[in-house]
Image (cartoon, rainbow, N blue to C red):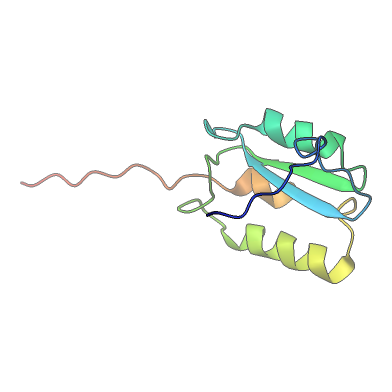
Length: 103
């Protein structure tokens, strides 16, 4: 009863486009590591792959979360990923580990 259609032969081919694309990867992401971002960027010649050194699968909990938002906003405003100053991602880090000792 479900509708069926023939899937095109090229359905699993990588997407290729010249539109500007901003790709983020977390250096410590076990799910989608930076190598996957590089693979995607290969087919998107107008892209920029930014690796956040201290990030996993997301940037939640890292210091300077505004960096991520600023980069996305600047990318949208400029419509260009190539000329973004992405140096702030190097300042994004986990907060220091703190323990409280009861006396």
